[in-house]
Length: 143
Length: 143
DNA sequence: GCCAGAGTTCAGGTGACGTTCAAGTAGCGC
DNA sequence: GCGCTACTTGAACGTCACCTGAACTCTGGC
Image (tube, rainbow over all chains, first blue to last red; front, top):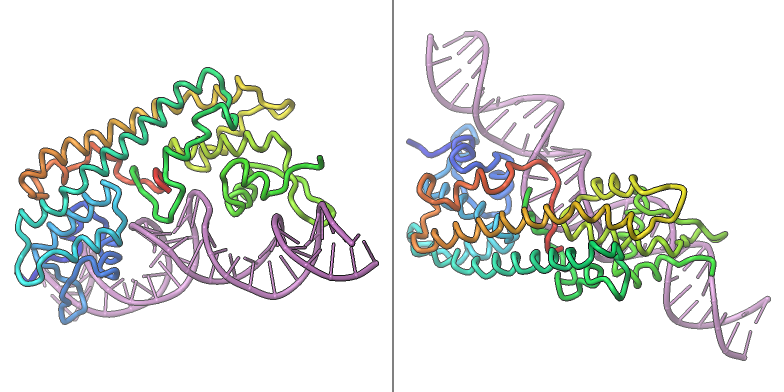
């Protein structure tokens, strides 16, 4: 009646309570407190948390997710259209991820015969165009 | 002549010097020291580092890589056949990764229209069979 | 009023490094 | 041998997205 506990949100979304608290510290979600200082979440938070988890699976960092969530309307409860707008951009990311891994796999196929891993001859070892050069920010695919 | 410096190994392999020192701390690579306490690497270390980098791109943790490297012969310099044996097992991993992301993408496609992200109806939100439940250990795809 | 279970904060750990620092070293020309 | 620059050193701290445990407090049912 007065909102969902952190345990209820965790159970309904599959997120760990520690993650929910962490996301709240980062400002991704909000809660109100009871007189005893316990968190209580609105029901709309469930959808927000679901969005965060889905976005993570697609490979977005929490900072990117925070930015995306910031474009949601303050005044009203987000609609299905709002959520759809945010998730539409993910498609390309997934295609890109698949493309990268497929390329890596094909290179591996052409490389396994030789076992080379040598500098100029082996494509597996020259991935400059396969993966970005490394900015910070990990993509957890299988956390 | 008396071995490669850490900077030379970094340049030839593309690994950062900080990573090389870290891997040495973990026992993945070895070095000898000069009288001035600087690291000097054998030329074979280049191939070893290349293997580590390739294995990481495939998604192995450093611990898994350490275990794989431990199967290399101590007595002699590893041959192309040795390296090929180690990398053969990666194929399935990459296929599995592609399968996972493709499934996620397909679910996203069927989900974008509705913008739902709701609990029972949206596949994107029920990924229990898509990704493992989360043991520790991050897979960095795009570091 | 009691108790179990769920909640709280805080400190510290994880993996795989990157960054920054003062201080030391290598190798070059001269 | 001297000076110069580029490189290297270990230690300590930061990063990201949390997890774990300690020590405590709240909530809800009986």
